[in-house]
Image 1 (tube, helix red, strand yellow):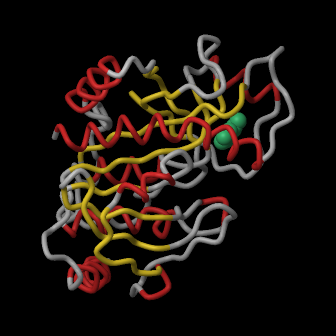
Image 2 (tube, helix red, strand yellow; image 1 turned 135 degrees about the horizontal axis):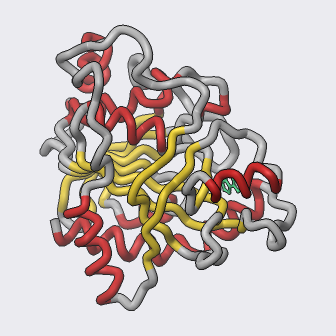
Length: 270
Ligand code: HPA
């Protein structure tokens, strides 16, 4: 695996004038951030050696190299989802590559169903912790000790120092930023009312179909991580309405400018 990661990373690093400090996955809710990036180079995933390519609607597949708020960044436009059929190794491969490119902080975003009754559609939840409910673990199998330990610590996957900074920035901008637990499920089905209820009982504040595999691999490599969920629908028994991909996209788009604003200021501040 090491050799493959090195090959992908060295292919990409040809295009950098300066190593990236921050890696961003432009998931649902951060798509518009691409307009804030001063682009140096765009590389379609299909051009990158060993890189999986994304197909799901609303997720183009290219790597963007440039600067954001004056800082060198690498951004993935288009995420690789487990429900598309990729293996966990594929889903998390880009995280390994970004680490090898030299990033010090990874930023993830997603759309999620709200489980906490204090939340409403359009709110932003910063992930404080997660519950992994995926049926396959990204670190299962032989461990490469040069990448990370066999049994990684998971006590602070989303570091408090970065969360505190994000909260300070949200406060200055008068933006309500919830902090909660993200339950990661495989999808592609949305949840039944009984499943939403169960996810709340076990401690979830929001549920979605991404982020957890990437977060586990980031923790494996001791990469700092900040992650945000946009609440696009409510999974609270009594408030559950039919949900579709289109509605999720629409609700996420409406909140996108707010999340973009916070993130730009976070990047400026670090
Ligand atoms: N459940 C799972 N994933 C989601 C949801 C949901 O309600 N909304 C957006 N992504």
